[in-house]
Image 1 (cartoon, rainbow, N blue to C red):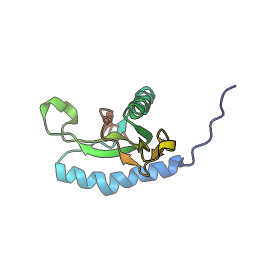
Image 2: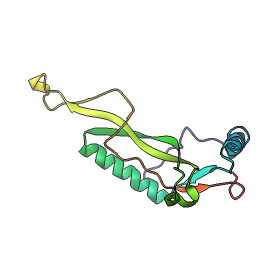
Image 3: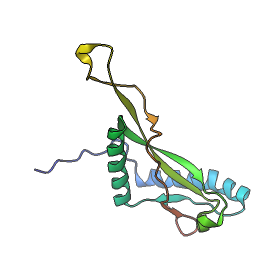
Image 4: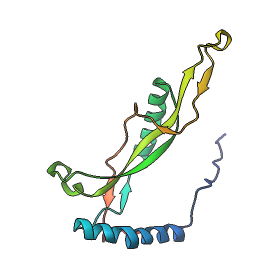
Amino acid sequence: MEKELERPTQLITRKFAKDLHLNFMKYRASIIAKYIKKEDANAVWFSVEELENYIEYIKSKGEKTGYDVNGIRIYFGVYPEQKKYAEKAGLMTVFLQATGKKIRTNTKNEVQTFALLREESNADISSIEPMNYGSIGRPPSLNY
């Protein structure tokens, strides 16, 4: 029997998404373009396969390194102005970083020696590499 998926609670309407993107273009992208003297990236694309692979990778590596992976934090970044980054040089990007809670064993009480305790935090997990190198979108070729 196939598991019925729950509708995510964070979904927004396409109209609100368009408004958010237009606000970005009006209040951020235009300022950035004036400052850097070129049009910047306005979107980053990852395939479903890439995202699923990264999620499986961080879960597995987290387990191996003693973490309960509980999320992905998305950071903004800017590529260095170097030839090796070609058309991405100097443009915005996003990268994904696994977050989670360290799992440790309790050695203070012999009865609970192997019990797992979870730290209360959603911190970046520095032992898991971030993911980058999605495809960037730039005006006027990409508008929401």
